[in-house]
Length: 208
Image (spheres, rainbow, N blue to C red):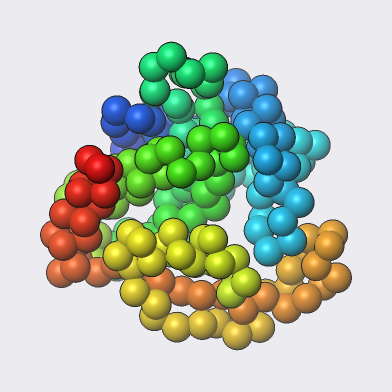
C-alpha cells in the first residue's frame, strides 16, 4: 500500500536537476556544509537547523518517520559539472501525513543558498506533488509558512497554491532572535481538481 510506513520510507524520486532520497544519518556531513552556505539558520522567521543542531534535527526527523507522521528527504544535486554534484544540498519533507483523509503537507524545506533559483526547488516540488496526487491519490496538499517569510510565500504562490487562511498566534517562535514573538502561519494548498493545471504550470516553468 502506498501509504504504508515501509512504502513511504522507500520512496525515491529522481529528476534531471535533483533527486529526493530518504533521509539518512550518513548524509549529516553534506547537510551540515549545505546549511552553512548562506547561514540559513540566522533568519528569525525560519526554523532551519544550525550546523550544531543538525545531528539532533536529523534524528528528530527520523524518529517522527518511525512514528509514521513524517517522511523526510535529502535533496541530492544531480546537475553535472558542479562542485555539489551527488551531494545532499538541502532537505524537504512530507509531514502531517493523514492517510485516512489522503492529505499531507510539504514543508520543512531548505536549500543551500548557492542552489536557490537554480530550478532545483521547482523540480523537487513537481516530483513531490506528482507523487502525492498521482501515486498517493491525495485530495489536497498543504504548504505552511511564516507570515513574514515573504520569499517562502512568493515561492509557494508560484507553485499555483492558494491561500486558505492565516492561523493567527499559531505558535511561539523559539528562534534566538525572535524574542518569543508569536507566529502567524499562512496556510496554502493545492487540491486534487487543481493539480492538472498546476502540473502544466510547473512543467512549463521547469522547461524555460
